[in-house]
Amino acid sequence: MAKPSRDLEERATVFAEAVRSFVRKLPRTVSNIEDVKQVVRSSGSVAANCIEANEALGDKDRVMKFRISRKEAKESELWLRLLHTGQDTDLNAQRTALRQEAHELKLILTAIIKKLE
Image 1 (cartoon, rainbow, N blue to C red):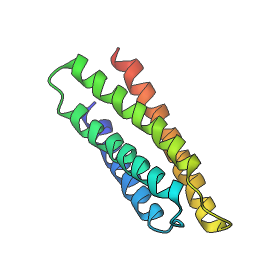
Image 2: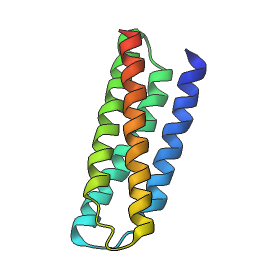
Image 3: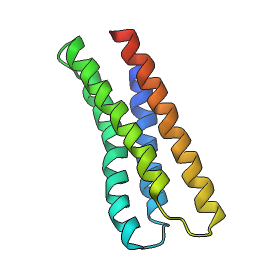
Image 4: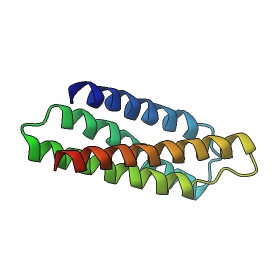
């Protein structure tokens, strides 16, 4: 399972990088300032917990790290949904793509967890 996990690690890291790039373009509203903090944390945590899962001390630890990663992917979906993009169609399209990626990461992590349990 090492190779798929490493590929997932990279995919989750690219997602976190893309979120950071996206939020730099958003309008600076009171709600965006707070929600951006949340989505930056949760998107980074998806990747960080995938890395930790690959370095886990045992199967139970690995499953728990993947569960946390899945939880953070779900949170990322929420925070992305709440971000205000104004009338900018490009930002809306980027947000939609990022929400889709968060959803796909969640599905992948769910499959991995089921396989490990």
